[in-house]
Image 1 (spheres, rainbow, N blue to C red):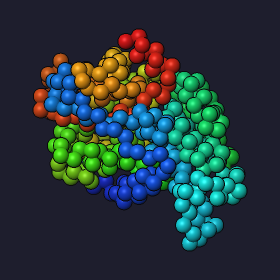
Image 2 (cartoon, rainbow, N blue to C red; image 1 turned 90 degrees about the vertical axis):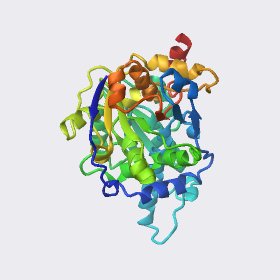
Image 3 (cartoon, one colour; image 1 turned 60 degrees about the vertical axis):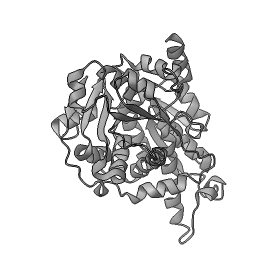
Image 4 (tube, rainbow, N blue to C red; image 1 turned 90 degrees about the horizontal axis):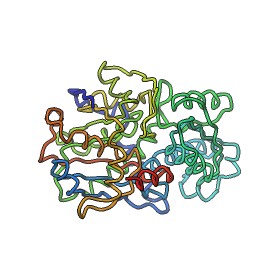
Length: 387
């Protein structure tokens, strides 16, 4: 495990992403059919095992039936992009989510195509959003993604293109093809010249924080948020929203990444974006990203407190512990990327020096994001039944 203390300046994140986008996203998504807040699990027995006061676990394993928090981001961005497109030909008309999903504009949108690169969950969200709105969708997946994740996307009507290499290779390919074919990219990562759409993806994610505030009513503010890195979009969104909600009482914000895909950690160490070439794929496939998102980085560089990396050693054990439950803690379906925070706490348990440097002790109340359920059912069953 590696640790970098960022000594953040706690800058205003509104210059990166406007806080009103968070309220706008919640106002839309809470009206979608089958919307329900995901459960915030309290895990006191697991916390005691790990030498902590409390663990709060935001369980995204059932969100919209897609089993991932990503369903809040990609699908919302699809809806927003379509509304922006239709407003150019319907000035002054209220283009509602309901009308879009009911097919009111299907004829006008028959040649509208969205596309994205994905490790699985974001692509599934974009494909679901496209399916709900009756438009075509192209999903690019790299060779490290399981076939079952590709099938899940195809069942939503999307066309899958397989790309040799890793996530960054698939992202490069979809950029080229989208330009050549005039498709609309719905990416969860941002880069120079492409930040508009990812802001809406990130805004969708903050529905979770909105829900958490209500679910923590009567509880003390968590002392720490430990959140998955990836490209930084999720972490950046939650960091910005948490700062806006809790101000100077905000929890200490800790980014966790696989040691084989630690682009945010490496960027933090040098103070500017660094690309990491991924030579070994992590079991936490959703976090296997080598290049940081510009928006995420611009928030985290000044507002994240710590960056840590973990091995894959505790991932399977963490998944099994969640499936089994400790004492009377609830049993939870947690996929490989969902348990990054748990695996980090397991790795920290007997490391007194590193725990102290992170300010984690017996009084710590840790908020974790269970970002996915069994989004790869075959892998999940193999790991949990073997544990």
